[in-house]
Image (cartoon, rainbow, N blue to C red):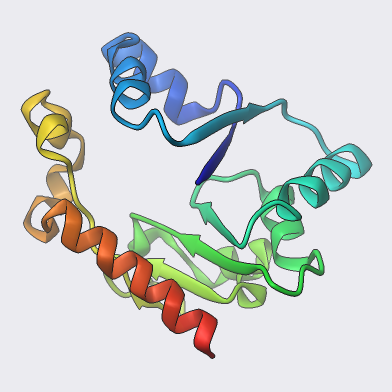
Length: 170
């Protein structure tokens, strides 16, 4: 699995400021098999070239809410025959019809959220989970509003994989 995120993105910087480097070390220690890469912010032709190269390497692209608008639009529109495009939001109440149009989310294969989005779009439910080690480290407090929707990590992973299997069979 390959994870790509913008260098110095808001969530990463906020985490560093609030918790120091420990969450990053924890992630790399517990998920060392994941390929985690950062990319420099770019636009226009340079972003198109980079996105085309990255999307050619993968089968599933999961764009997480907060992603750069232009990159989200490229993911929606670049022709990659075997690519499944998913948009994931953990705050579905904030996903409006204007967001769907701006980000071109109707060109994605699936929109994933823990509950029904505010926008009038087809969506599939995704379960949220916090690993035991993360909960023990106090990281679960970051999702207090979703604590009642948490499920076991293995069950959430199986459910997530099934969503993509169902999508691939369509």
